[in-house]
Length: 397
Image (tube, rainbow, N blue to C red; front, side):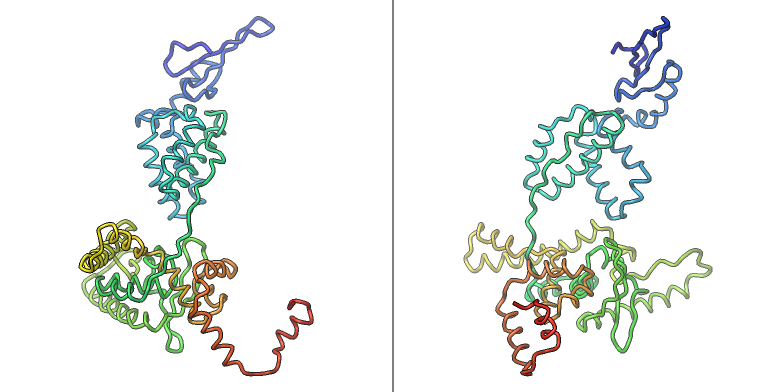
């Protein structure tokens, strides 16, 4: 395809049967057809100015990212948390590969990226998935002829099985500030995700027959729940509600003619009184975890452990915020709660909740003893009606 003398255009000329010549003008970078006249082609090319003026090369990974983020239909179908997550990864991809033309990426390079990021499989899978989306859009637009990131083969991510022990819980609560103590107890006893806990406000709390309830809609699944509050959490919640009432009373005396909707009274606010930024909450939480690790390390060194042994012990005993949801499910199961009862609190589907229990609750002696005690308490010699019906239908073999 011969190059046009004008920058940014390629032109191809075809001779018709009647002897006339027709010209086809294309974007030199993206190969996109722009029109049959130079003027029309340049006009259409000028629509790309917002990208080019920003220093972004058309047809590059950076240009694909801008196009993807600007697609209102696609972005509107994503949850806010997902958009934030994607934006972080896309910013990193733009920094690393922004100037690379999409058509220059090969299958071998996709596999090389996968190999380099093998130590962080979750991050690798997410970045390669986004690259697959970008290249699929590039293929639809005619920028590339194939999606080399398609079916890249996800890296295996081992499921976490760690749960918090009561000793770890006591140590965290002893070292954490009051707001993080409440955050810990909410994460554990509501069995919810950190994002949902940090969004909880006073309007979600109700009381019926002496028990507090937290009504919420899970941000990830949209499931509506009415979670009964555990008695260990109830005292902390009542104290927080009392603080909120005092704050509201003091503000009502100082603010006159407030315009707009009043901000929600968060159960776990940041030090500024607003909702925690995810990064800031993680930093505050991890500072407590770091102090716990330092205390544990000093104790192990006094007991004669080597530096390598101390590191191994700390790695083995490290716990994350997300482990608290699993811990709550395990403790519910150990207490004898049924799978439907657990699912109604956590918001999981019953089948999925059972898989969690099967994965994270080993065949522990404590559970076996509790089951035997329930059997011993059931001393009736008559076969229950449910079992009789199941037997007649051939469900018991």
